[in-house]
Amino acid sequence: MEFKDYYDILGVDEDAEPAAIKRAYRKLARQYHPDVSTAADAEQRFKEVSEAYEVLKDPQKRAEYDQLRRYGTQTAGGGFQPPPDWDFEHAFSGADAQGFSDFFEAIFGRGGMGQRRSGAQRRSGGFDLRGEDLHHRLALFLEEAYTGAKKAITLRVPEVDERGRVVHRERTLNVKIPAGVVSGQKIRLQRQGGPGMGGGEPGDLYLEIAIAPHPHYKVEGKDIYGELPIAPWEAALGATVPVKTLGGSVNLKVPEGAQAGQKLRLKGRGLPGKPAGDHYVVLQVVMPRTLSPRARELFAELEKEAAFDPRSKQES
Image 1: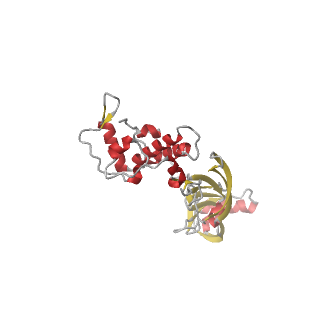
Image 2: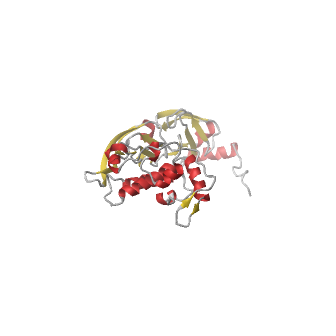
Image 3: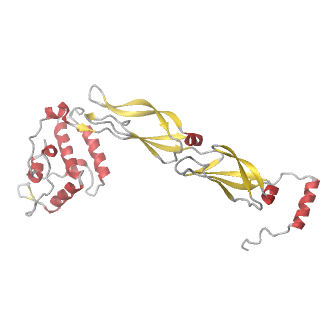
C-alpha cells in the first residue's frame, strides 16, 4: 500500500493554517476539475486533491492522520505499514470516501464505505465547489461615509467559458453603502463573488472601505477632529461661535480662559452608529495680522493689567 502525503499533494507545510489549506485546495480543485482541465491526468489529480482536503480540513481527522504519518513505517517493498496499535476513531462515511485511494480505504475505511463513483458520475453533477470569495477596496469621501452612498463598482470575476477555460470577465455592481462606515471596515455581499462549479454556490464579495483624506477634518474611527480658529478676546472672555460639522453648523460655547490646542467635544456629531462618534474641536488662537494704533494701546494696557509669564511652566 502506497503512503499518501496529503500535505505534499496540496503543496502546504504540515503546520499550515486551515485557511492556507483551504486556499490551496480551491486553487488545485479548479486547476484539475475534469470539467475544466484538458490534462490527461486531471481526473486522477483531482481525486488526490479532494482526498487530501477531506482529511486535512477536519481538525480531528487531521490529528489522526498526523499521528499515522509520524509513527507509521515504510515496508521493504516501498509500501506503508501503520503503527501496531493504530485505531482510527473518527470513521469516514461512504460519502466522504467515494472515489478515494486504496490507502484511504485501508487506513480510514471503518464503519462501512459507499461504492465508488466513476468519473462520468462525478461530471454528471455530483461535485459541488463553492465560488471564490472576492475582495475589492472601495474609496469613499468622508461625506459619503457620513450619509451613506450608492456606488457602481466594476470587478474582474473568474468564470468558466463554453470551452471549459477559466477567464476573467468584467462585471458591474450597484452597491449601497450604509451610513457610518469607517476605514478598514469590510462589508460582505453574499453570493456576489466568483461563480461556483458544478452545483456549488457563488462566493462572497468583501468590500474594504477606505476613506479619502479630508482637507479640513481628521478621522479616528467614528470620531471627527477639526480645528477652530478663535480670536484672543474670544479665548480670554469666552464666546459662542458657529462650528461646521458633517451634519451641519452648530453653535459651540468656548469657555472663558480657553487655551490654544484645547479640545472641546460635540457629542454624537461624528460618524453615525450605535453609538455615534463625536466631533472634537481643537482651538487655535489667532492673532490679528496688523494692529491699529488704538489696538496697540489696548494690548499695552492688557500687558500691564494682566501681566503673567506664559513660559513659567516650561523647563529651562
